[in-house]
Length: 514
Ligand code: ZN
Ligand code: MN
Image (cartoon, rainbow, N blue to C red):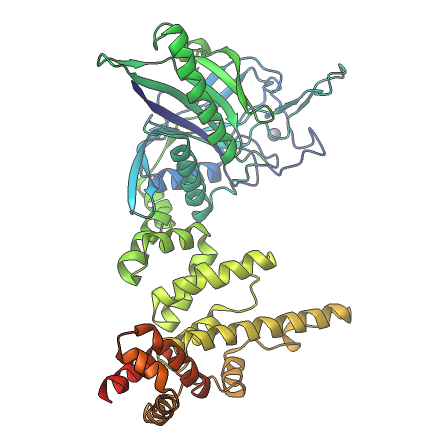
């Protein structure tokens, strides 16, 4: 007996607008000043009339296109009725039977090393308003509960996937890819701490019994997961719980109504909340205060033209055109568009994508992490690194020398940085140190790092070292390949800046001659 895990996700993403979806109130995150960003529309006073925020619609259309969705040219607004203290109108304005987009997909990497990908299909993406926030006294001392309506009416894009996800880690990968995509196209900051990206997970199992039956267990919806780790852990917990439950009760999908569960991160467990309402319980009907929306060909084309190259396409291009491995392409694209722009500048300046990728994924990422910097604040600019790596690509210096120059540049930056801090001076940092291509040139000169390109000079050194070392030479000739290492070390000491690979080839050629 074994089972498959079946997961569908519903993601709510806050769109980056300055004002709410149906009124002019600010959407700024402002938990310290509750209920200041409100008006008659978003607190639901009788007679107040909503007006659609065009920018919110534009951003959601852009997102739907990036999610490969079909776009409905006619779409409308519906009221979803339910009562909750953080929903003063008694209904949420959402989209029911005519969502503005449907039938999309997100491509995710299922195995980066092997380069395996998978398309998670999307049922629909629709636009709706957020509710406010209830704040309950959690000390158990019976203090009041509060409602903050600053968030009420914030535009949300709800993205619903097909149950195509097969494991907790795949769910996490899907969310990471979605977040990357949304930040690339600039429609949301996806700040999970501030609730800009929340996720509900629908989970059940397909149990394959020994007698060849396939039984679907009851579906559970885990609500309001607000961290990638939370999603992964909650699903893992739920899968184990459902399998145990099934072994005890043998309940199939139609034996129990759909259940809603919460996630307690402290206990690391899900807990039962309520029976899940059916769509009919909400008594959806078209909102009479809002006009339907039509999408013209011009508007569609205009929004489509604003889309930048998406992460999946970027990875493909890096692999196909720049020869990067799946892994390197993945690491670079995952850092965001500023990092990829830096990478592309360096790669085009030095003419060697793989070399650029090595430096970006190792040296640069290590320095950024160690110094808590972003690529925008990193002191070595892409023009300078590109110039340095071009010298490697054209054999003017070795990789080892390039690394020495790189470290000298950073040391000089640190020294200049400290000096300006010590003197509490606010003068321009750039005057204290110089991280230019001219400085690269002068460091190479000062340290004698220029590669000796005239290989005729190598021969005399190689001959001298061979002459001085009869034992390693004899060892090599009797078949001990490793013996050349000692000889190369001595040669490199004298030929500072020489390409060790060239030296090695020349040495072996000389040894096999004599
Ligand atoms: Zn308002
Ligand atoms: Mn929703």
